[in-house]
Every structure is written in C-alpha cells, then in structure tokens.
Length: 202
Image (tube, rainbow, N blue to C red):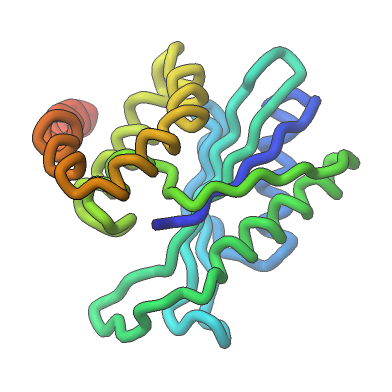
C-alpha cells in the first residue's frame, strides 16, 4: 500500500498551502496540479537510485479550525508501460517526510509527523490491493474533483483519513472482507463517481 504521513500546523490554510507549494518547488520536484480552494497539490519526482520511474505524490491541506491546518502527504511509485521495478524501497515515504520537514521550516514551526502505511484512498486501496488500480485512481479523482469541492468535503475527508485507515487494515488482512468491500462499497462508489465526474465535464 502507499505511504501516508500527516502533520498539523497552528496556522491558517492559505498560508500553509503557499508554504507547501514553495517547499515542493524549492526541493526541485515537478508540480503537476494545484488548487488552493480544494487544498490539493500533486507533484512528481524524477529518476533516482531507488526508483527508475520516479515517484508521484499528493499533498492534501485540510482546515481543521480557523488557525489549525492538517497536511497529508501520500505517494507511490510512478507506473509506465515498461515498468520493471516491483519494489519502491520506501522512497515515497522518505520524500514525503523531506517535504513535510521543509514545510515546517518554511512556516517556522516544529513538525510532528505521523505515518500510516495506507494510501490516501484507504479502503479502496486495501480492497483492490494496489494503489494504482483504475478504481482507486478513479475514486481519488472523485475525492479531488467532486467531494473536496463541496462545503462539507474537507470535514468528510478529515474524518475519513482519521478513521478509514483502521477499517482498511482489517479489510486488508481478511480476504472475505475484500470481496464484501468490493461489492458493497468500492464498486458502487466507483459507478457513482464515474457518473458524477462525467457530469462535471459536460
């Protein structure tokens, strides 16, 4: 599963978002997407000794209170047609920690990092067994392009990140629960996501 780390800063969301953008750029990574309203930043790294394809990471900035903001960084190895590397050597986690520490330095705050060995779409990733599965990618897009753009979206995602990982750990360890989760949660939600995302484009 993908790595996810988080840290909370006693600063407004707008300032934290700008610090995240600045930190990613300063460290030399390529920003592929950013949206201040939804609090999302996606970026990529290049080839390294640990990763032939590089890593793709996302940064989610969630406003918990007026001057309290949570930053969640998660990532996984990039995939391409000639993918031969099967193990990422934990590079995404190292990069996420590096970026988080840089954010803390930029903000002038100490950084307390919490690590979770699940992707940011916890239940879908545990069910499908692969962060890069098309359904997981579709649900990640649904979160980014639909859920987080609703007034209740940030709060929903916050609670999901807080409690979803515990459910995912159980699902991942029990094969029969993977099937139940697929038919009752992931597949129906993926169908709904596809319809709603299609309506956004139209």
